[in-house]
Amino acid sequence: MRINSYSSSGVKRLAKALKVLSEANRLRILLNLGIECRPVTEIVKATGLSQTNVSFHLRALREAGLVKPERRGQYIYYCLHDSQLLGVLDDLSVWLETRAAGAPQAARAKRQSARARQANSNPEA
Image (tube, rainbow, N blue to C red; front, side, top):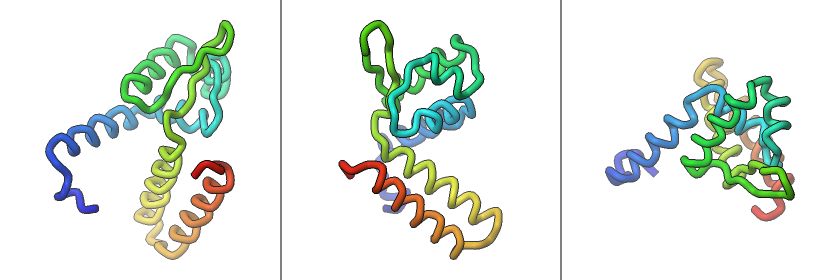
């Protein structure tokens, strides 16, 4: 789909999501979540950020609809709202690498490999 075909509200929604994703710590949190739900303590350990910082960023990610909390006993686990986001981020990363390296064929092969891995790890897709 061409960006010119997006409605004004669609462009605003996309800009809002990209703004949330543009913060490096939020992106690190999302990538560390992967397809698994994790408690805040594991996210803190995986990212090296303080609990206060992780909680702040999780709130922003939750408000943007990118993660969802799940209560499990006395703990709250955070999960990606939709694991397809990892594929989108991987595609963007490959696209950026392609532009930097100027190697479109290698990037296409890497993207196809990443999609195959994601399809194998997400049987619902």
